[in-house]
Image (cartoon, rainbow, N blue to C red; front, side):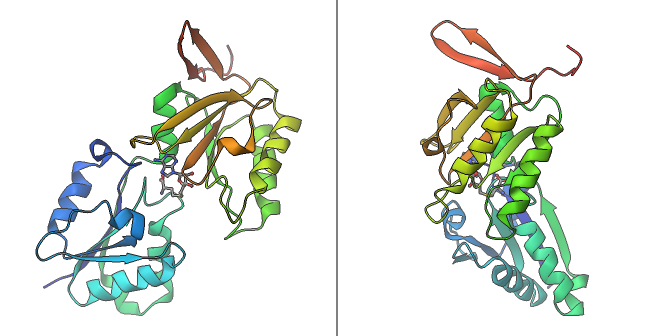
Length: 251
Ligand code: SAH
């Protein structure tokens, strides 16, 4: 029996936003590996072993997946959103690079998913309609000084931005620093969108601007979208406005 590893994105939360390709891989698997909260989204069945682990053990989890596949298992490694966006795909390839040579012969496929910032953007209109970037605000794996530098340069380049991992109990204050940088260097009316638990029953979307935004509007289940100098709101009486960034920078 030949094992394989498929690194799959489960999308932002709702079943409808899981791709058929990912559902098919899950149906063919013998083992599913991932963080507890993502494993909780997988239906158990005969012949399937679920391996749930803690959040901070990505490399251990990657090695476990590769070992099981090398022994003939059909392993799906799950992430939320897209597995290549601040998630397990890089961890798997890092483990392959550092691991035994035989792991390089394993069949490894990355199955894309809908990442949080795209799901959030779709809820409000088209705020990412021009050039944009994604920045992880967690300084667990990089220095905070680099995060500040990337925010400043992205604003200088007039990119729209998606902030992942904006604020946690362990990092309660840094998001406030990020907001104060934005207040210094963005136009004060630059739209900022707080999208919490997109596509789940707990979804909450707040549309604000850089001047009025408060750190408490974000938590670990929030992705924050910051507009460009051209991003605008279309007001609709009594209804949530649409937010969009024009296709052309020239208008
Ligand atoms: N691979 C994931 C990102 C993992 S990092 C993806 O592509 O979406 C975890 C961060 O993603 C969270 O802190 C939050 O910023 C964001 N996130 C994930 N799911 C979300 C959702 N349903 N709604 C809002 N933000 C989400």
